[in-house]
Length: 503
Image (tube, rainbow, N blue to C red; front, side):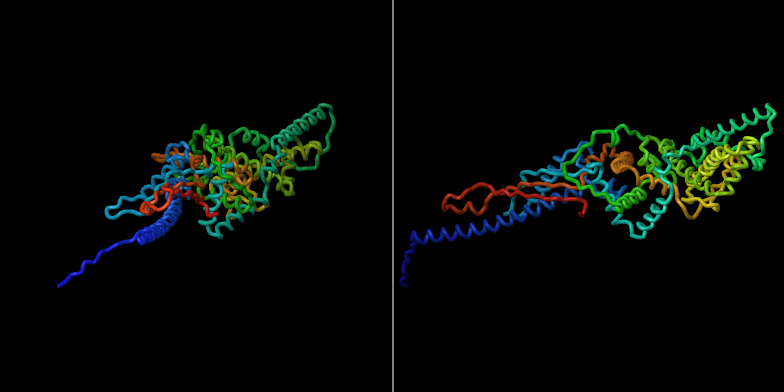
């Protein structure tokens, strides 16, 4: 069998053509790889930011339902570089996994990461924290509960408030009355010594009564808490160290612009958040730094006793003013006060002095009634916002006796409770002050937990803007030798905004 020997040849032209085809194919593959790398960088920026934000402070979420990232990671020293380093570490594990078999054609690295803008809970007077607290209420409490709370607050707006009591000075009215009694007695004595006969004032003196003016002096000189605490209930002796409270220390600050929007609805939502998360004298929450947390948020003192004294003092002045105004409209009670005034100063009392002494007696009567009401409030009961004859409990003729026996402490099914008064006061308080004191309570309570002694609300991030730089080496272009191709690495700049709030 004859075999032919075939001689194979490749022309220069064919070689160049094959090289061009190969270069085109490798370039196309590299282009596809470049797009994949860009997509991977885009996905990774989201993954790392959300992974970092997934490491929210668990204690803050569990205790108060809020999502914040502690950028101090438990050290108490705010530093966003820790977050950047954390994201770079997570990215390295994500983009360059250890493969047992095969090879990864899409290897790349995050070479730089920066938190450009971030918002801390305490920024702009605590508005960042307040917004999340409002959102918590909107998402977790139903409209029925919100409407009911709003009605409670609205009911109280028809009553007397702090501003109404600005010119009310009970002690001054009682002093004037006592001076009038002294003047009347002196005038009667002088007339008697001169042999003059004074005409009767026309009012029958009261008999069998206790002097309400002396009772007023006794009650006014005693701490309100001693007078109003219900039987068997003791005042808390808890205290808190406020030397490093948010309003006193130098706080860390973020650099994210915050829009402050104040409206009545959000203020109500914030009040509901306080009502749900914090205790007070009539609703103590266990294992807290202070028992009277809402009282602290309102008054800012370092002990439960001082905070409760401040709140009781404010309620007492309002109730005393409310009761005093009611007595001005009750003809029978004013007539009774006149008869006691005549009995105290003498039956020959000058008619022009009767109104002065009557007002002093009405003030003393109002004080006794008000103390009874506050005792009711601290027992968990309610009192009428505006008094009527049916609501009145005390008798001025035996005020001291009834007060000692604790009469008038029955609870009403309708009216204002102790916490309702608290929220009326809180609604009028400065926003920044409320926000900071609320976060003070959070800090104090969380620091009581093991391993959380460095917890700080001014290290808590709510949202941030992050910039990333990714780098990857060309792969398939190394097979392309035609022309002067740049062998530099690919670089991808990425940005991402992330927040625990939806808006």
